[in-house]
Length: 389
Ligand SMILES: Cc1cc2nc3c(=O)[nH]c(=O)nc-3n(C[C@H](O)[C@H](O)[C@H](O)COP(=O)(O)OP(=O)(O)OC[C@H]3O[C@@H](n4cnc5c(N)ncnc54)[C@H](O)[C@@H]3O)c2cc1C
Image (cartoon, rainbow, N blue to C red; front, side, top):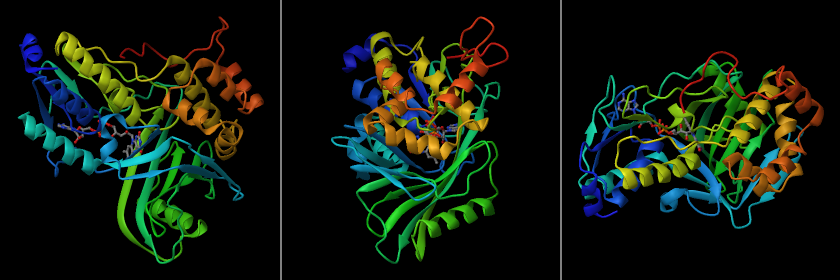
């Protein structure tokens, strides 16, 4: 958009609150569109400032306009079953990619500075100025059927011996003790034969102690054969996996958006690709109608949310064994179908094909436990009006 078009929407400029994955993705597009706006981001030392993190995505290109910031990519992915059996998938023209938040932060700040967009370094307390897109975190709603946490500790390690395959990302290595009502695995993103980000991850109801994460990660590093190594850096996270709905901001003129508004896919804990789709749609709305009255682009399709909700319920109830479930998902389906589903891009026919490969008895009894007296499957939280987006 040119500055002339921006002038058409003269009025209070938009405020983007937060310059994490969501805020930076929108800010990038608004600069490209020539739209006037400002940013409020917590200073680096503030308690509320999101720590640095590695974002991974997959597909033919991208993520979004940030392909040039990708620091590592892999043409193959693999899963390792508890017994050590390996399922490897060649991604063809796709890549599994990761980019680091400090690279996005640096790039978006340079772009904002060049465009003269003000970035106010402060902790915003209270309501956002109107109009705004507010990406600050909110408490995770607890009124869903299921709430698991995806929680992990990762170490960027340098091994003494060449032990990693830099062409293969290990998405899930189940050679870890499994928690009841959840699943645990190692996640390995190698950047050379000796260096990798290695994480111990759980999808479960309860977090571990600091020592607990260190023990499990240490065990996994040993079992997966990393051997003696030095630790170059650390990354940790706690991400909600829930079928609860996040409420809207409730403030006229303030659109709540990001991890705080359901952009995280319940079955994966990923959101970066979804945020790119939503950022495209939000920027287009601002260009077309100005910054007032923005509507949240739905993060996920309803049928995908329903499938996720069933999977989470089957996992927590113990009806499915998480390790077997995920390994079989990749073993029995073309990899683009699985990764497409996890990204929300599969067609209904592909979803049916995917469901046909899931453990039938366990999924059927989960479905039956959800069929209401009207004979319909409900996605809504068990109590009350979910409200919001
Ligand atoms: C460690 C970790 C790794 C992840 N890895 C992946 C991945 O590989 N792939 C994927 O798709 N998803 C991943 N996710 C999930 C999701 O993509 C991220 O959580 C993502 O950062 C969410 O984007 P966001 O903009 O909503 O939140 P954030 O990126 O956390 O951004 C929120 C911003 O608001 C700012 N802020 C907070 N409070 C205030 C305040 N009061 N005033 C001003 N500013 C404030 C913060 O400093 C921050 O910049 C990961 C999450 C975590 C925690």
